Image (cartoon, helix red, strand yellow):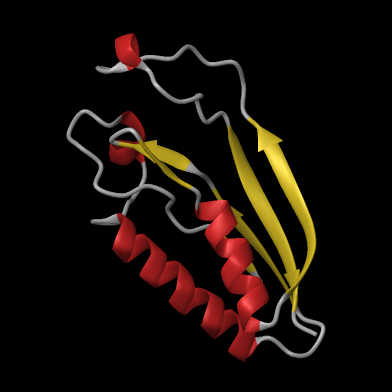
Amino acid sequence: MVCDLPFIHAPGKRSIIGNRFAGFKSQAELRSVYQDAMFEFYRALAPNGIVAWKCQDIVESGKQNWTSCWLWLWAVEIGFYPLDQIVVIGGGRKITGHNHGRQIHARRGHCVWWVLRKP
């Protein structure tokens, strides 16, 4: 299986990424959908079945949202074995936006793929 769900929530009207792609209403909704999907994948996969799951960590309102870390924790709790983690680095795009004059955290220029196997 391959999973590539939206990785952002509560996109504002000025959010370039939020307007280009779908998003969730809140971080709680994102986590709930991700967890439900993780349980469903585990249920549906045959033994030794594999899921490749793309996710991205974000900073929202000055707070870290470590989605890739949550996914790893949920996967291990459910019983998946993490086979691999692939970090894909994005291009060197210019940072633009309404709040970049006061940036607090490092820019997220990567996404993470978790490759998980059901034992």
